[in-house]
Image (cartoon, protein in one colour):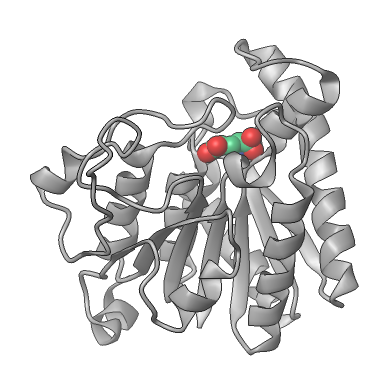
Length: 263
Ligand code: GLU
């Protein structure tokens, strides 16, 4: 399978922005193992701004230049960490930083796709993030949930997994409704499902349930199955890939056969 795994800042970093070593180590181990099992892995990783802020001792940067400076520092730390940990399992990573223009303009999109396909052919694991140091609001995708879905669509992935600090989509906000139930399977994103999405989630990341549902819409329309799961336990990826119940699974809209023809 070709699998795109998007990892949120809340999984990679502690609340103050310092690296969550246990989470990252477990994640890299499971991703390496899935690759060893024959799957093609593409990672969309957040964490640049959050980890840069942590390293620079800034709490929640708000203005654009500070966010971009934090991203510049954090992206280095992020890739250094991935490179070091994936190397322990003899895997090679490649960094890809993009903005919305790279998807919107045909020649740039083609270049991007070619690079990604070649990295996969060469057996490397592409790690993608927004190029936050230059991406102002006008040219940014804005959140990595959407970015993950766009990548999964263009790379004709079989599966997109969004790892976050929540277990999935609930019937109500589980923080305020203790009786809220996890929805394990969504066949269609109806207005009722959309009404369940609130605003942004954690303090350092950008996404929330709204961006995750947006991602689900993009992915499932392109024929890609999507799962929202908790990144607290990276082994959840085994359950997802092997088809066991985990998180919230959004079923693809088109058959795999049509996907080949239409995407
Ligand atoms: N690109 C941002 C970062 O690396 C994250 C965006 C998001 O949280 O969706 O910090």
